[in-house]
Length: 182
Image (cartoon, rainbow, N blue to C red; front, side):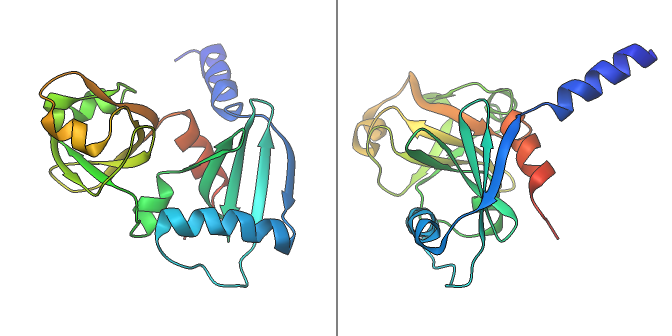
């Protein structure tokens, strides 16, 4: 690869998200973020937890809890990152997709009904779900439900989940870069 191509590629990877502000939250603001996290994770994180915020020019805020980016928000809506279901058992509904859907999901495609193998948990339209691949039962994306679980069970075809964050996407690369993973 030519030197100019390498340097331009490196520049693109480094400028995934432009952080303009980074700070630790006060205990009052931390409680609000931890409350959201605890409802998503289904577990408590203790009282002595440091919550750091990364504000980006793209309008996305990342929340690092003890050095691990477990939440992100756009506006007032919070979403889990893939680190959350990778590191902890979550209370979020779980969807399993077959092996044929995995490459498409990992390229950012939305999830179609024929690719869904199983549904665990109840959810409503626009709820956040974690999508797992069938073979190794590892989380591969975070999606928004386009239908409730009751309606979805009766469906045979069509787009059923909107992919908002998947392994190796722009968000994932940024999260891995700023998280302290041991």
